Image (cartoon, rainbow, N blue to C red; front, side, top):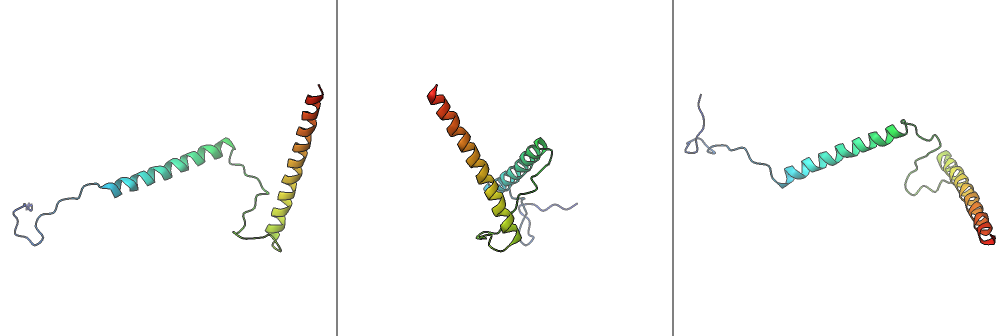
Amino acid sequence: MIVSTPNSTEPGGSYHKPGADVYTFLLVLALLALLLGILYLHLEMQAYEYQMKDNVTVGMAGDNGGSSVAGRRSMRITDQRQKTCDQRNDALKMARSRAIRT
């Protein structure tokens, strides 16, 4: 078995494996962050038994919802949320006015 020595006459001399540097550390850190994010997402979804709302839509950036079906559906969901918020605000106002009277 022939091993190259530091005094070798071969072109390029001997080869030493480079050590880990800052970029290797950053790569490992990014990998750990990704794995931690995946684990957190798994635990969060497990808490909800992997159930998602059926009425959630994802639109393109800048989509005004004019003529697309998804846009109209999104507007309908927004209107429903607004009604719910209005009802909650009205209930809070009534509760506050009752508390002030007593």
